[in-house]
Image 1 (cartoon, rainbow, N blue to C red):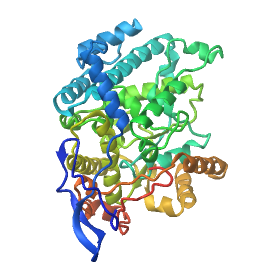
Image 2: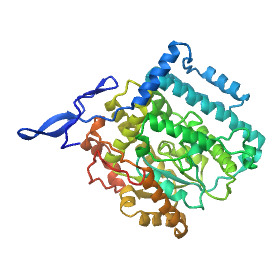
Image 3: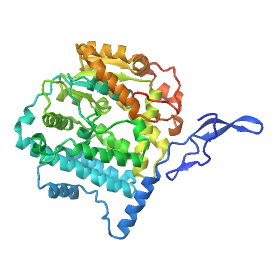
Image 4: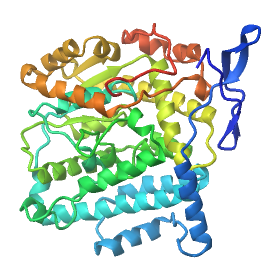
Amino acid sequence: MIGQPLPAWTSFCGHDLSKNTLRGTYQSSRGPTLIDQPIQPPRRTHFIDVADGVIRAGRKLGAIDPARLDKNALLDGAMQATGLDDFGDDWFERPFDALLDSVKGEARLNAAGDLSAMKQFHHILRDRLYAQMWFKRHPEILARPLRNPVVIVGPMRSGTTRLHRLLAGDKRFAHLRSFETISPVPRPEFEQVLAGEKKDFRPKLASRIMKVARLANPRTLSIHPTGPYEPEEELGLLVASMWSMKHDAQWHVPSYAQWCEDEDPVPAYRHMANLLRLIGWSQQESSLRPWILKTPQHMLDLPALLEVFPDARLIFTHRDPKQFVASAASLAWNQQIIYSDHCDAARTGREWLGKTATMIERMRSSRDLIPANRMIDIQYEDMERDWRGTMERVYRFLGLDMAPAIPAMQRYLDRSARLKRRPHRYSLEQFGLRENEVSERFADYTETYGISTGTPISDTKRLRLGA
């Protein structure tokens, strides 16, 4: 916020951030003066401090049990809650072991954080049990084809959400809704929902979760505007196998992230595909309509994606790394400050700079596996300047007439403008990074793909139509 007084405090979450500075100006009696002032990332809300205090007090009084982040205890708890004992392919226990070790050894969760982690793991394990129940009850689910999915692949905050939601408005495609990525598996009484005798509880549950998330951090609405029925990515379907960089964004778990880089995630993608089949069945969706998919996780896992979806058509999104590195770090920071009292903005910036470099490197090396006629590259700046012309390119690539989809696309843009009440503000300096450093790190990437890098990042950058 150059040109305005900056906060005087220089620490947050117990870490000194005073070295993360840039030159700012202030108005003194002798006129504008250049001084070193820290640019601080946003603070967490008082709501989290209160919740954390209540949980700690409840544990001291014996009213709230300590969180048990033990695999066997969590597995047993899910089995007791459901009366089921088949989790499906037990491969998921390998990333689960690595994740639990990292959470307990590195994440330094507060009381609200470890309680939330325990509830999250219980939810995932319960859904695995219910998924296997449905596959046994209705074997036809696993026979549903998943033909010619359209998969959007790009770095976090590179326009993937906007492109995904524009395409999801076209009724010629199938898509996940937000409540289905939060709770992908219907409950045992769902056949009564299909018969019109009950309402699906999952949208109401998703709405409650979103309300709590906004209390915990109101910035979530600016960073990723959504609602229970909004089109959403399939990251939650990979989390069902305890796999995905959602965990990196939520907690400081570097050893888990490193473990994942050396692991073949094909089993996680197979389970994801089966959950898509289950969701399509629960939607009573035609299996002839191709799915629209997207998550930045696919940048790391393209070989696994292509093994499970061999006829996928891929849309790659590109954006100036100065923009998406800062935005990704901001997204992770706004998650991690909820769950831990020991956050470090410079560490967050370094981690996401490195993770972004790994994502791009893996994406580039895997593109050789894809026939040229099955992929297209889309520039973020082109979507900013001319979304309709850019989408016409996409539709030509898909071999479809765009005209029938235009009204739904315009409705999404109008709805998005209503959802996003405030701009998402961020800067590289908040996370101890410099623009020239990021530009140099990704120079070959930006040159190879013709990415515009002329616009300097602003800490008041407004993502008008969703990232």
